Image (cartoon, rainbow, N blue to C red; front, side):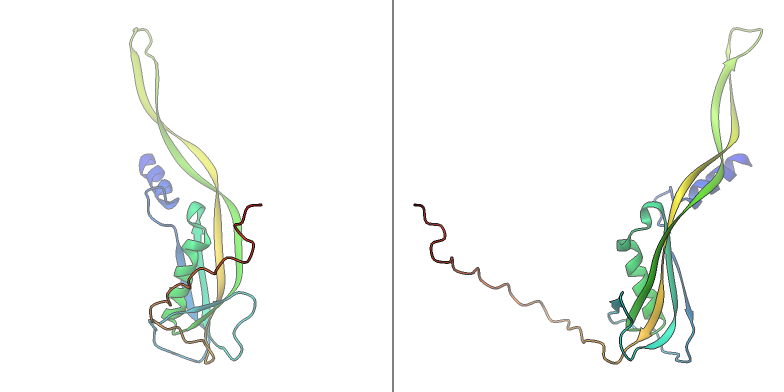
Length: 170
């Protein structure tokens, strides 16, 4: 029982290589659009002018998963699920929380009156601090959204010629 509690606590902390990124999206506006598969523009300073509110989006992660590179794609995906083509990130917040769990361990002791070593297992309470990063914002539909082309990028420009006197030695 205690061992299963310890394993459950470790799994909750994401120690098994699984991502701890979680999210939620709640439709709040009267607009009910189908999910979209196109790109989602990200706005951080102000929402796009003329954007219509579709809903509230929240993304969170624990520990090392709580970086923008992990949170932003999930945020954009949840906005697209609400039918939005624009996302306005209102807040990114980090908080710290103490997580309590049961730790099991193996110990040894002298078996009295014999001279042999005895072994046992035990469980004891343990805790550590985890960082939880949360990104919150709104899903929007914006009619003035710039069109993103799927065309291949333009070839790079050739290097500029050297300016007069550059590369000469006195």
